[in-house]
Length: 202
Image: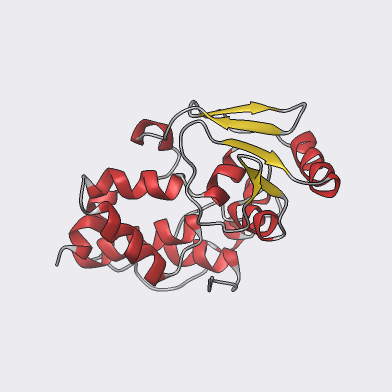
C-alpha cells in the first residue's frame, strides 16, 4: 500500500503543531519544529470552518500515516455507527499502532517497518500487514531472534505508554489485547473528529 515518504517534520510545520511523527526524537533537542516555528512573515490568516475541518483530517491522517483513499474507506466503515468515535477506534486497532502502543517501536512508521519485515506474530501466525485490525484476546509476539533483539533494545531505551486495553509481558516480549480500545483510551490524540465527520458529510 502507498504511503507518505516525505519529510515528517514538514507535516508538523504545515499543521503548526507537533504531531510526534518521529517518536522520541520529537521530545528531544533534535526536533527541528521549535527552531522553524515563527520564521514565516506576515499576519496569520483566520481559518474558515472548512479549513479547520480539513486541517483536523490531515492531522489525523498524518498521525496514523494513512493516505486519503484508505482513510476515506475507514471512515465509510465507521459511518454506520457513531463515526466520530468508531473512526478513532478503527485507527487505534491497526496492528502498526498496537505495536507502537506496546513500545515495540519508537514511532508508528518504525512499527510498520517491523511488521512488513515479518517480525510480528498474531495468535502464532505471521502478520505482515500494518493495517490488520487486532481483536480482543489476540496474542501478539515476536517471530524470530533478530526481531526479539531489535525490540528488546527499543524497550530498554524507552518506557511504554500505559494502555488499559493492552497487557505487556516485557520479559518475554509478548502482549495480549485485553479488550477493544475505547474513546477514553485515546486521549493523547489531539483531534476533533466531529469536524472530520462534518467534512465527509457534505
